[in-house]
Image (cartoon, rainbow, N blue to C red):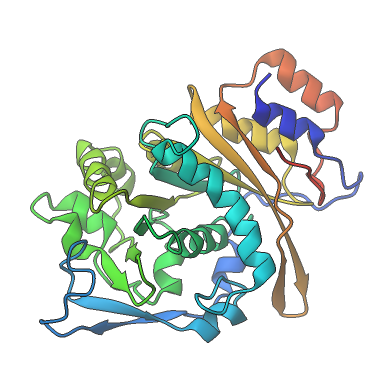
Length: 328
């Protein structure tokens, strides 16, 4: 039995009447967030980030807005939140570059997803990128690959900017020309780009693999984070998963059933490095208070066997996952 399935078994139930996971809809965390950045044109003689991007715009990130939205704010982040994301990113970085751990092929291409909408994957993607940008040895490119609902682009105020889909449609464009620098050192953003009706086909194209490879080598030891659609709700997610060496699956406590998580893991296919993050979010009035109760399990996702699924059901896999989790 994999460590992922062992981790799932250790998740305790919240009770018979826990809230059901949504079958559709936006991520409430992402849709309620205010813009945290704005693009400005930098001077032609400004060499900031020139080794990574030729895009003439830089994103100015509002640190206070980050804090107000419960995100990691560089130079002034919450000590507790920073510590939690340090625990999440450390195994990812180690396996990406073989630092005191087995190197995972394409491990610096990291997909952040969830089983269903509303579990906080975009919130996790942004915080993970902000945390990883604090690593001295790595640049981070945050890619908005949820092209149907580009929350990362909207939150960073670049929803109208060209991005990933434009790169995929126009083979003459270099990824460096659309990646946007930020005033957060070592952090870059690639927007989703203008919507296309053939987005799934574009993501499944050979051009997508070429773009991913270019991003993976855009700087010395870069980390590329794809904020991807939910696995059980779109076909685009499984396409992005074929490119990523590591996958981070966000599970919302008290909402997502173990069966939904197992189904999502089964869609990843093959022996893939998978990480589970338990995100506990509570709603208070009109604001979201983020209780970052993270559990971490590292393992490989293989399609669940029938007897494994049966055991999970017997343990209450159709109920919401609990608020408490002791990860590896």
